[in-house]
Image 1 (cartoon, rainbow, N blue to C red):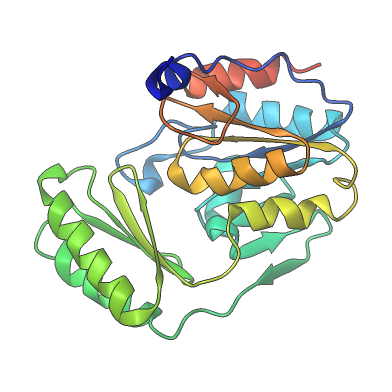
Image 2: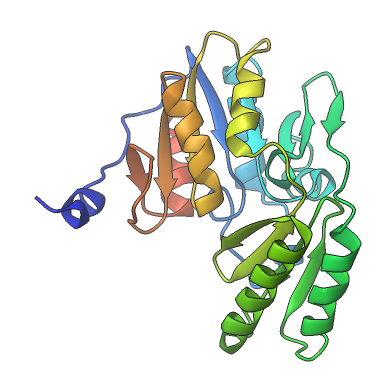
Length: 249
């Protein structure tokens, strides 16, 4: 059996048991379909009702761990998830409302300006300034992929910013905690401590979350097409992920 066979055969997880679970959820590509522009993702009644119900059933052992900013997560999820790790873990909010975050890297402004210069030549490219990171989206301009990636590689080498590449996006971020670090931090505090962590995500940035969940006795669930991953299970897409979460008992 080849590695490719194992990837394709990654199956769905058993029904989620809420009693002993700590649940960590990515947002884009996991709870919400990927949109051409970040602002196109809007509140959804089905999703947000589900999150409210899950947070209650889990006695607060639910956290959203996303690359979006804290304000943007709250906009989309309408405040249904008190526990949030935003900007890939650089910002973290506990259920009591306490927010911790790292200081922005001094080169963030330079990187943002450089990416805006690139995007300025093509209205289909979009720069998203998150303060602690800056992102260049080229989903609407796929022919510019090579230019976007080359510029991001160069800026990361010149500035010491961390480079994260995703689905039709490059992101330069302040060095600091990642999604796995966020899982570990939540798991040291009530009400998460002692539970079994389960992490759902779709992108390469979620691999740190998968690894952290597995190291702590839980597992990761890849959402989307089959690929090499540290997750132990896979769901086919956002609709399957929501249906699996709705069947939790």
